[in-house]
Amino acid sequence: MKIRVLGSAAGGGFPQWNCNCRNCAGVRDGSVAATPRTQSSIAASGDGQSWVLFNASPDLLAQIRSFAALQPGRALRDTAIVDVVLVDAQLDHTLGLLMLREGKRLRIWCSERVRAELTSSHPIFELLEHYCGVDWQRLPLEPGSSFVIPSMDSVRCQALAVPGNAPPFSPRRDAPEPGDNIALLLTETRTGRSLFYAPGLGAIPFSTNCTPVMTPVGRAAAAVSSIPSGTLAKDAA
Ligand SMILES: [Zn+2]
Image 1 (tube, protein in one colour):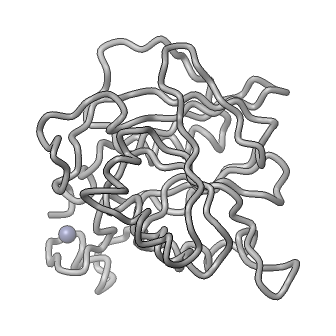
Image 2 (cartoon, protein in one colour):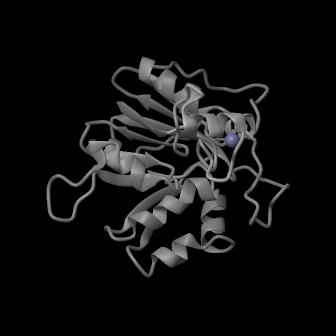
């Protein structure tokens, strides 16, 4: 399994466009030795050819420009992004879907809760029907359930409901339910090596029934992506 961390910042990115804190100002003028970060997203692939995008951030076009493996290389109109998985309906994980509207129908994996948001309160799925269209794939959340994404069939995926608020536009704001936020455990079937990706984690669960084994790349991805949402923005504010 190949993993690319496309972005590791909280919503707004780093530096945030309207933030003049020490960190944001410092990274702009060079007085702080920090690395600018785009908003949270990773890409994963079983074969290095077909890629699954985990979250579509507002920075998606810049992230595609920064990673040649995702760029068109086989035909006049082409992409290596075959599937998209969403961990929640937050703007910083979904606005990038609009940037993919010129392509083929999007196959998008998300929970029923997230699908409901994306067809009502934040109806980006409805918008996309006027462009490329969306084929929704239901993420199973039942305990012990797993699924395989056909474009990455060497990897077993598990979706786990995790703590976290519903988006500000949601009718369930401050009253989230299982499925509003998920984490993903990706396990390479050949080696058993795993990656745990939880970019929207509102709190570390007291107990968990999974003990992911991180690959070196996976460990880096998990480390930068498991920071509870808003941490970087808060640190930088
Ligand atoms: Zn700042």
